[in-house]
Length: 227
Image (cartoon, rainbow, N blue to C red; front, side):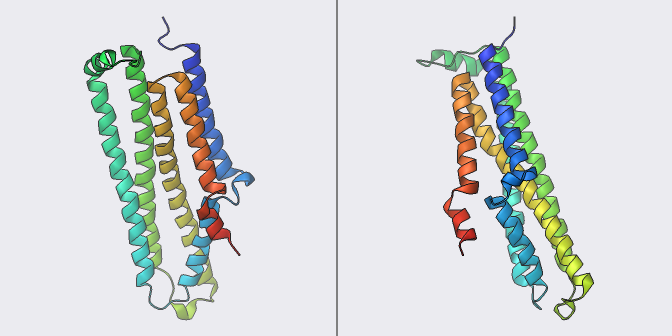
């Protein structure tokens, strides 16, 4: 007997489609242009161009260290979340017994619970790989900072090309960080499936709406685009 109903499969398909379409729209479509992430990519390029003009670049390195620390925090958090999901997988019988005793408890079978928990763990594993790679890329950017030509050579083709390469590497690091954070948002939406497929669809739509608003209709976006 199939452990999941048609409604469960529809909700899961909606979740996967929402994540995929949002990611493709933000990163590969012109519709993502103008979003907050895209605006930050532009400012990264501006930052690298202006760094060429500075003789002393300690402040740039301090900002870089802060970005690395934030990425390391999320990578560590992902590992904790993976451990939590695996703990739930090992404690299936205890969890099901507890849920059955709760009024209006969640109705689920052992197979359903195990599959859902594995799916949650996979999302956090994906997030960890994204944050870990982003952290590594930020290390590479720091090396590029150290290799930046002196301010006296800022107008040379070599210096301009180096600033462009550094900005592109910086953008790549930011993109992988954004993918990891996106996974966290959708992991929260995924938790709705543990209640019911209807709740799952609603939480997926809510996560999508929150992320879209922050990218295109938030105070932060208006602040960075204000003339």
